[in-house]
Image (cartoon, rainbow, N blue to C red; front, side):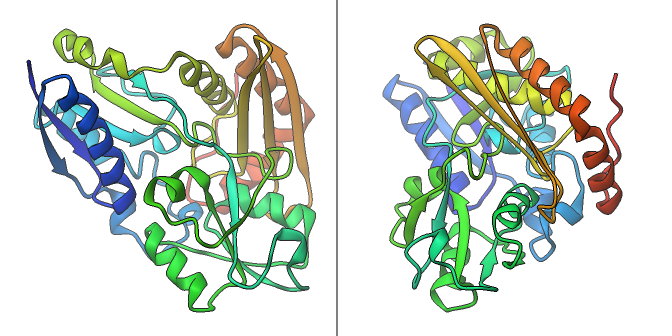
Length: 312
């Protein structure tokens, strides 16, 4: 059996994810070490993610350790991993997916529709903000950074009437006590890859690939590949108002894509079915671009520090 070194961020959720993978590897007889690596996103904790504009802000330093041979594999939240991996790396596995939806958390209110006029809602995601504002322009959306514990504590202490987080992270950490509503993908479309873990290795590391291939879940691979193809077609990263949600229905792959202005004044939503995940993702992306997504994203990138994506 092999000795495998995992690179991971140091947040509570990232460590849960890395330890989860470690346990699966140890069950197969491998020795596993864990190296905690601080990323750019961890160092900039007091700025809204959409204002940072650093590509790979939660993955760059981990990939540097992987390239240097300090670690053998990286465990990422797939939604944090850029769609265009450097050619020296490969995504060897995408794990079985937890619930990809977002959830509404509140101490005093039973659901989104119960929020009073002008309620203060916490999220640092432009994707969530745009879709919430489209439904309720009156809401006071405020940035919310920090690990899951910090965010839930701010809610509990009354800084927010409600906060919106990913269902998967809360479930993994057992922090669901204030979850009042699971938000339908037709209301708040999730981020591409949300709920899945991506396992990254050096390209050509055949021995490590052989040890890790069992972690790959074909269903999760198909749906997240479709979502990431849409994201790639739109030229977007994890900090822009793009939603993507794919699921299998009776053997057919369905993809919902959303592009929205941050203030919710314009929301483009497209849903199509297909067989090939990449082709479907690119087709939905192309349709959204023709419908006006390019103009929305050009505006958004102009408002942040990220570059405007070039479309073919």
